[in-house]
Length: 150
Image (cartoon, helix red, strand yellow):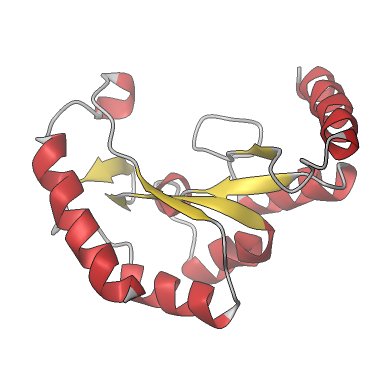
């Protein structure tokens, strides 16, 4: 399946390049995919020039991966999802997770990140993501990100 998916994404990347969209064609490596680790995501990027990433630290924190490994993907990110998480918990309340947003934002600023950031909180039973008031959590994240990006 990974080979078939890779072939499909390769074809999309070639097509996007014809329409000057190569920097916008991206995949989101996540907890339940063929790119569940930074190493696998980077390998896919090596195999598919022109592909970029939607980064979501929560999917890697979920697997217990250290920040330094996750940050290896930063140069390839053109979109970033923001939500709090911890080991084995893909989505947590603002004040319960372990993701260090000040560090991430400082590193992204330092590296000249100019992509999009989106607050992403889900209400689905998948991996228990239906246990919080997402409106309140979105507001808390929004306020923190405004402060960090100012």
